[in-house]
Image (cartoon, rainbow, N blue to C red; front, side, top):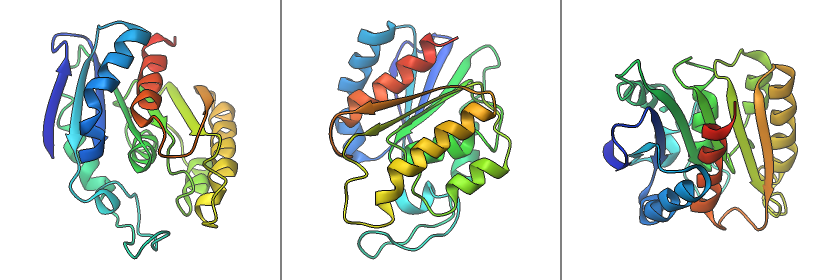
Length: 208
């Protein structure tokens, strides 16, 4: 994974985000939006993923759009992410948008190294994921969830379940005693990804 660093490298607040090329094109806008909402006391480490569907998926699943199926590379990717967490004096937050948001949420069930998780418009429609959340303990204190209010209005039957799944995920986290938020944004999945992700990280840093 290629590493890009933004913000204050000496800050105790380290935001780690899995990104693709599209995310990187808007990353400075995202950083500025985080500053507007939570101040500039943070360092953001963006880790570029080369094979999005394989490297961020927790287990194999069939394609839901196009012909590209989902792999099971999340465990290997998480190992690489954890190698970035080398200072016990810092607070680490993991986040991302879409499938990267799902990866961040899944990672909180696999490790206790993250202070909070920023799951902006996460792909919680992913087959079996809500059941996974129900059946396993989570190891973080704070989770931010969001979704666009038009994301569930799609003709794709798998992805149309995203609204139902995000509501279920929020309820599961509440029952597990996690400090969590669920924010509804205007628009579909492709609107304001940088702003939605910034809002997620800002909420984590401000929440107690």
